[in-house]
Length: 251
Image (cartoon, rainbow, N blue to C red; front, side, top):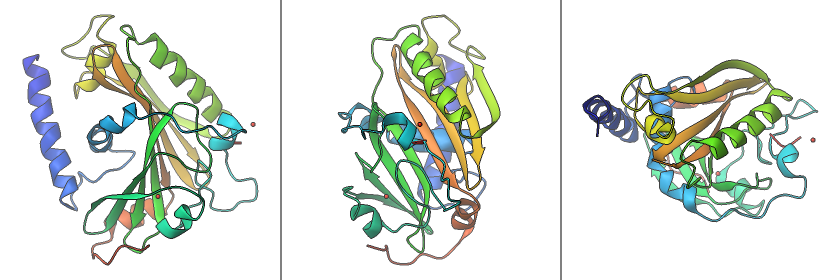
């Protein structure tokens, strides 16, 4: 591994560990904190290879939709503030994954509305058991040496999101350090500080990040992170732990 990439990975791993242990410093996961966000996504990379669940008949449009009624609609058929029990009642099987001092993380392979290439989800609940964040982990993209398949799907989802939400930033750059060859697209994205392929959007009650995550040469996956506004900020800053409570309009 390139020495610059190795050094970045060591720093990256330390930040990931600090968040996992419930550190309330600036390393908390935040859609606006790229390194911390990638840390959580990379911890769940193994879930990106699970088979895709059945797609909702309304397809991509239903999964990414904004609420037309002004309700606190999240994405993928969920609403902000739902409890794990309420999500289960919609037919999703939730598995407890991790607990910090103020956040509870569950995983599931299906929600009421799914994209065709969904592999799994991470649902983050506040200390009071209310849904404040969703991370969609796409199925693994393989044998895509130049990143063409990943870029194509990224552009397709980016267009769908831009038709429903306001795009606020975009970074699509690789080769900043270490991997700069045309066949090293995913390797660069897997190396902290080498490159980013991300678009960020905002809706009335959410922040959204669409991103390509690299695994190794020729392999990666698409991730969509959705955060409740302003509930996510309140939830990640809360300090005390309590018991877990029993995670054309789709995006």
